[in-house]
Length: 264
Ligand code: PEP
Ligand code: MN
Image (cartoon, rainbow, N blue to C red):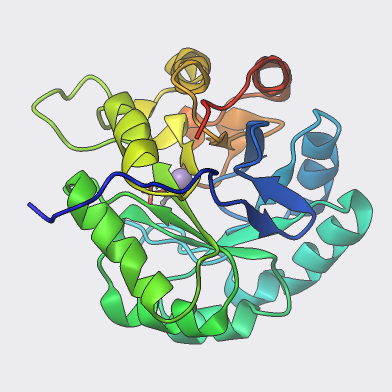
């Protein structure tokens, strides 16, 4: 085990992603389809009306199988620009390698490093050098210490704009896509000064269970939620089974507004 000291910092670090601040005590909601797809601009406008704080805007997707939709790539840039213009919301996009991060630098407000790339150290170092905010997901086979260790690769390069995201780990239980480790939220907030958000979508793998897990995350003091949502969930180009509809998302946003992140 790494030797991790309990953080003495009086306050949780506040991470800014465009106009959004994470870690200031008010839990945030970041939502959107799993991947940017051709109808994204209209989807973004509808999502914005639910009151979300930022939009998922993933144009590169790490898929288990190569024949699955891999994301629209750079073809999606005009859609990102339009979504930004219409909604004014910050955009967050997953990147799989340093070249993708550089290509998107002027088009998104923050990056996501997915579970499969949590220990892609060259990617983390490159994002450390770019000094742009990063949401670092927990690998589904990673311990808390390995996850915090991965965040240090960004911070060692001078980038402290890091938000940790618990998204479920792989256990013996196959009923859910992953097992949401809510303990990690409590423990990591104790061990680091970084804000911690929760993705209930990739944990549940089924839209029916997403709202309850999201509310549970808020109850343990998470600094926010990252949720897959779509105006017509069953038509989503990827992860359709776990996307929630806009009415459900509105309810989650209201729950977040009534919540307070746990004190530092
Ligand atoms: C995603 O957010 O769509 C995603 C691929 O998540 P994860 O890396 O947590 O599997
Ligand atoms: Mn997804």
